[in-house]
Image 1 (cartoon, rainbow, N blue to C red):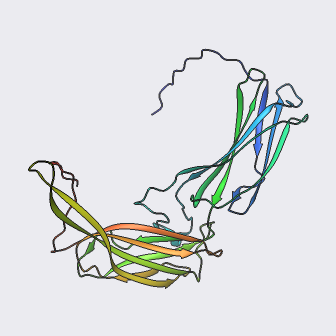
Image 2 (cartoon, rainbow, N blue to C red):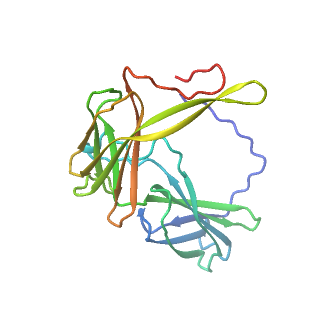
Length: 277
């Protein structure tokens, strides 16, 4: 459903010019050269010349998705760790030429953001000191190979074989053949100790440790490749797949899952009466 939006306009003076930004490309990667061009022109015609201008480039992370049918349901990113979601790459200041244009060339370096969008905002100041901006965006691919994971079942059983599917895709999302993949399966072990605190109170301190529970060494194919293992105990599991792309840069994906069974599992909780489900 749509609802009306009310706004209060206290001062509105239309800008006499408009701003355009172009990136000379729709996809970029580390090592590429980004050619920026900002132009400002009067609505009545002619250039808006010699105005102060700022060009700002920002990377924003987003999930990698593949359009290939073989990649349906695969996860290509960590789902249990908070990584960097935004990074400012550059901020350049200058002035428009007499033709109302400003060009810059930026060499893009590697970034902790492995996939997302590159957004460049160009802001041009008018005679009142206010900025008029325009934005251009392009895709960002920090790797040319990405590894994805998919569980064959959402809940594992203690002592019963389990399967995780592995697929490698390029930056366009097409499955790739011949990439070496290392898969590591770990189970979380939680221990507790009663420690005397202030006064006569005894508090529970929890220690968490991830211990090896299996591994696979695979080679990617045009279809998903299975990694099979058997959980020997109930509890929380994490599955990590790691590869190197054609330029020897790492990429890994991780899934979290659970195994149920007859063994005991210790839950690390807060020091109150709550229970997280």
